[in-house]
Length: 221
Image (cartoon, rainbow, N blue to C red; front, side, top):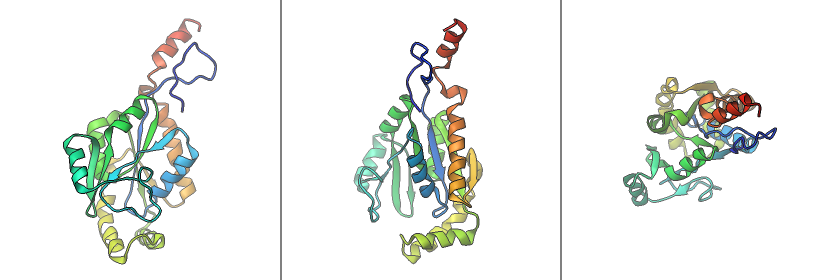
């Protein structure tokens, strides 16, 4: 969605608004990454927050597109200098969200998508609740979650077992989210998230240009 102001009242010109942070969280394998990729392909008004991480790149991942890959010394320095909106350690690797790029996007009326866990979501809620829209993605069943983890063939068996052992704890945080989706069908889940995004963009508090727009309407403009 455009962040242009109302201007002189030209038909079709968008009302200025503040961007939002759309968070998708789930246990590993529930489908949040797949949903995220489809959202970015279908909605040009949405961009991905590129996290920093200390874990090594997976096959096909690119620096600056999938993640910013840094060592632990650099990550610690970013925490110390308050360059991160949120950060957490997951399966022995640190992840965090650079603050400057996100704040610039929101101020310009652009929406930012986050693929983060419940720890990061809690931190965002503490620091920027009014900008946050959070969605938790649940798997349809535990056996299906395990099947998906094996199917993607990204991790050794020991890591899959660790992810399954942690899934119950991750799922327990679902009540902390604004919306919950059970990902039985990817297309249906994508449609649900797009509907949530459309509604949240229309929230009165985010449409910062409404006051001027309504004033112009009342004056006959």
